[in-house]
Structures are given as structure tokens and as C-alpha cells.
Length: 45
Image (cartoon, rainbow, N blue to C red):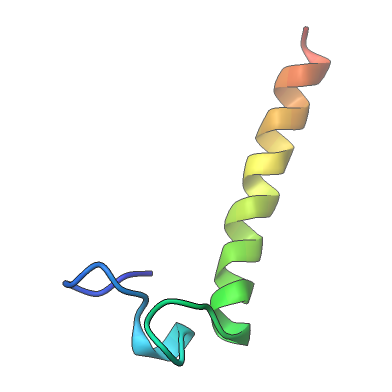
């Protein structure tokens, strides 16, 4: 998601810092997976 300077890539941010709709779409996929893992861990306890 970041460029060689550590800033968000141009295609997912208009200002190098805040995500645009494409950036949020990428983040949603990552967040959903993390939530599923956390919920599975909670259920196994």
C-alpha cells in the first residue's frame, strides 16, 4: 500500500496520507480477514 517513501501510493490516496475509495477497499479486505481470525480465536477459548 505504500511507496518507497513510506507514503500511500498515488492510486489509493489523493494526498499521500489519507486513503481514497480504492484505499479503503484494500483496507476492508485486510480488516475483514483480521476480524475473522480474531473471532475464530475467541470462539476457540
